[in-house]
Length: 250
Image (cartoon, rainbow, N blue to C red; front, top):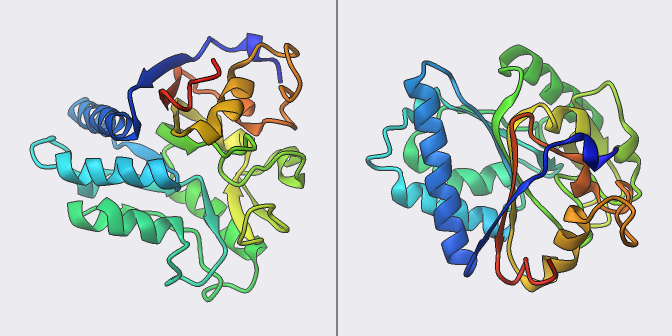
């Protein structure tokens, strides 16, 4: 995938993780409220991880007075761990705990859990069917974390999921990051997003950020297989929201 075929991403650098989370949460609330004011039903892609949970907490804190009708927002998850529904490792459970239940979100689309279906393949197929039935054709905003290895969602470097085409979701096995079994949206599904926001905090992510934003072929590790974060771009905008530590190698 040639990065030159896409508009250049916007890079925002904030002093620390707290400032980063507050900025992202405020922007998300504005985007949702504006979409609803224009008569649209927003579809938002959520991610997991430490900085995402900070963002979720800020959304909950700032929700009052935002003008958002939370019952009319569809929430999806870019990936999910294939574990029991009550597991604290589930992205959906964390997001519900952090803000979804508190604000009264009703259109929350969860990947089936391991105590609901037999295999990650069944969970992936069921989630894809739900996207076909209830999806809006594209995410209005898709938020993605980036791992130190450059992975996004559960698309890991040099892993079979990177090569999946003509599919909305795929099952992941032998994940290099536990738990081993997961469900993830594919590159094709993730790029059906009007806005893609990368949320990255911490010095441990700095090399991945540098590789993700480097010109193609300018340094080792800038192939899509090496750094999957290079493979997702918004149809209208791509924004890397960084704190100073994550941006330290740019």
